[in-house]
Length: 439
Ligand code: CTP
Image (cartoon, rainbow, N blue to C red; front, side):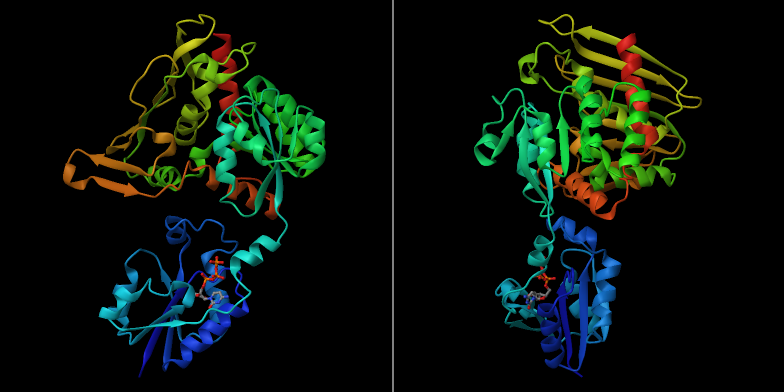
C-alpha cells in the first residue's frame, strides 16, 4: 500500500484545496492530511485564519478524500510523521517547490501544480475590511499603523490629530488627515484612540454615539462611573468597545495567566510589575496635559495585578517622585496594593530606570517574566528544586499589536464583546487611576 501525506492550513476550503487533495490521493492508496494548528500557524506568522482548527479539520474531513486527518502542531513534525506513519510520498502544492527537498531523505517528495486564481488569502480579502481611523498624536501610532498591514481584515483609512509632527509616515500614506473628529467618524467603521487618558471618555462616547466600534488605549476612562457609562452605551449601540492593551493578546502572557489559574505556583501571594522607560517629557506631546509615569505606564503595569489577583483589593498606597525638570509630573510612581491574602506592587517610571520585569510569587514557586514583560515571548516557572523549573516560549511577531487587531476584527465581525480583558478589570484600572490622582 502506498501511503501519501500532505499538509496545509485549509482555511475557508476552496476548490484549489480540493483539487490538490484529489491529486494527492491519486498518487497512492492511502492519504493522510495534516491540518496546521492555530498555535503553529501563529508561530509561522499566519495570524489571519478565519476558521478555527476544528472547523478546518471538519471541512477537510467533509471532502471525503482523506483517509485520515491529523493536526500539525510543531516545526519538524513532518519528519516524525513520515517515520511514524511509514509514508512513501510527501506532497504539497508547487508554491512550496524546493522548500521540502530535505524530506527526500525519508520519502519521495512530489510538488503538484498549484491551481491558478484562487487562495484563502484572496477569499479573506474579498470580505469587506473594517475601516479604521486613528486618533491621537503619539509616535506609537506609527507602530500601530505598520502592524495593521499584517491584519488583512482591517484597513486604516484616516487619522484625526491636533499634532502631526511625529506622524509623517502615516500622513504620507493615507488620504483622510483631519483635526475634525466628526469628519473622521463619518468615514470609518471603528476608531483606535491613543490620546491623553483625560480625553478618552469624551472621544469614546462620541464615537459610540455615532455607532462606531472603539478600541481605546488603556485606561478606557478615568473613573469607574465613566467606564460603566461607556460600556452601557456600547451595549446599547451594539458596538464593540475594546480596551487597547497589546499585552493581554500575546500568547505568552495569556498562557501564563492560565497556568497561574491552574495552580502551577500554588496560591498567589504577590504580583510585582515594573514598567520604566527613560523618555523625555517632550516625547509625550501636548504640554497642557499632565502626562507623567502613571499616564504613560500605569495601565500596562496594573493589568496583571487585576487579572491575577482580582479587583477586590482592600487598599492602595501611592508614592511618587516628581519628574526632574517638570515637578508637576511624576517621574516615578510606586503603588502598593493590599488584598485579603496577597499583595501587589506596581512601579512605573519615565525619569528613573529599573528592571522592567514581572514576578508572581506563590506558595509552591514563582513566575518570572523578563523585561520587557509587556511584549514578552518567554517566561519561566521556577521552584525550590530548580530541576522542576520550566521555560515557555511563544513567538511574538513585530510589536505584538497585530494580535490585538485580529481580536478587534473578530469581535466586530462576530458581534461579540472582546473577552480578553474583563469589564471588572477595565473598571478597576480606571478606579485606581482616580485614586492615584487624588492622593
Ligand atoms: N493549494 C493549491 N492551489 C491553490 C491553493 C492552495 O494547490 N490555489 C495547495 C497548497 O499548495 C497546499 C494546500 O493547497 O499544498 C493547502 O494550502 P493552504 O496554504 O492551506 O491554502 P492557500 O489558499 O494557499 O492559503 P493562504 O492564501 O492562506 O496561503
